[in-house]
Amino acid sequence: MEVIPAKSATVTVTVEGYGTMQPRSTLKLVAEVRGQIVKQHPGFEEGGFVAQGAEVVVIDPRDYELEVESRRAQIRQTSAELERLEQEERNLEATLRIARNDVSLAKSELERLRNLVGRNVVPQSLVDQTEQKYLGSLERLQNLENQKELFRPRRELLQAQRSMTRVMLRQAELNLERTRIKTPFDGWVLQKSVEVGQHVNAGQVVGAIYEAGALEIEVRIPVKDLKWLPRPISPQTPVKAEVVFEDSVDRYTWPAEVIRQKAEVEASTRTLPLVVAVGGTSSPDRGSPLPLRPGMFVTVKIIGRAIENAFVLPRHVVYPGDVVHKVVADRLHIQPVRVLRAYRDQVVVGSGLADGDLIVRTPLSAATEGMKVRIKDSQGLRRPS
Image 1 (cartoon, rainbow, N blue to C red):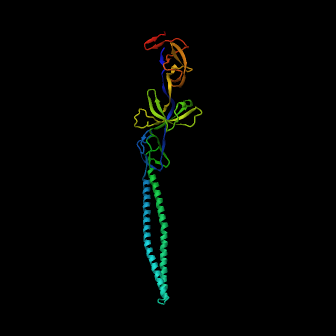
Image 2: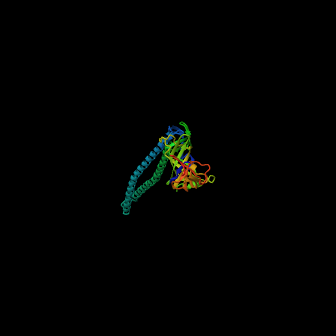
C-alpha cells in the first residue's frame, strides 16, 4: 500500500460562497427639462461605455439660451434705471442746496424788513410781500424734500427687481445646463430609452448606467463558518477574497474584498449575507479575456483565519467517523482525528496526528486494527521484518 507522511504547517482557511454579480452603483439618467433630443453620445447604447463627464444626451438648448439672454437684458435694464435714479437723486440734491439757500436768504430779508417797519422806514406791504416770498421758498423746499424721500423706496424696488431677475437668471442658466445630461462616473450603459429627435419631458427616464469597476456580490455564509472569518468586517477593515468564474474549459479569477456583513441571519437558511466588492475589474482597458458583468454567477473564496500546526490531507484518506489509517511498526492503526475544515479534495486536521506519521493513501475496504501491512515505496515493495 502507499503511504504519505503527515507534515504540520500553518494553514489559511478559505470560506466559499456563491452569488450573482450586481452593480454597486446604478444610476437612472433623467431629463430635468423638456425639449427635443438633438444629440447623444456614440457610446450611449446598451452595453456601451461612457466616460465620466461625457454628455450622454443633449436636449435642444435654444429656448433656454434665449431665456438666459432675456434675463441678462432685464438685469442690464434695471441697472440702467438704478443709475438714472442715482443721477436724478444727485440732481435733486443740488436743487435742494439752492432751495435751502433761497429760504435762508428770504428769511434774512424778512427779519431785516420787520426791524425796519418798526421804525417806520419801510411800509408794511413790503414786509407782507417778502413774507409771501419766504413762505413760497419754504413750500418749494418742502416739496423737494418730499421728492427726496421717494427715492429710497424707488431704489429699493429696483434693487429687489434686479435681485429677483438675477435669481431667475441663475434658474435659466441651470435649466440651460440641464439640457446636457452628463455621467458622474465611468459607466456601462444598462438601458437606453430615447433616440435623437424624440421629445422628452422633465422627469422622463432616458437611460440607466452602472459604475465601471464597481461590482459586488452578496454571498450567504453558514453560521458555523463565521468562526473562520477575521473580525471586524467593515469598509475600513475589509477581508481579502477572490472571485472565480469557471466553465468547462477555463477558469478566471479576480481579486475582491468582503466590505460588510448584513445585520441579520436569514431564518430560513441559517446563513449570514456578506457583501463582497470587486473593484477595477470591469473597465474597458483591462484587457481581460472575460470581463465581469452583472448577472454572472460566480464563486467567492474568502481568505479566513490561519490555523497553526494543522495537517492537510487528501479527503479520501479520512474515513467516516473522522478516522485515518496510519502505519505503526508495519501494522495498521486506526487513528481518530479532529477535522477542522473539509474541502472538495482536501481535509484540514487539527489534532490526532504528529509530524512523520505515515498515513495510508491506498483505499482499504476492510481495515482492522493491528493488521500487518507492507508499504510500497519508490524502490519497490518493502516487506515487514
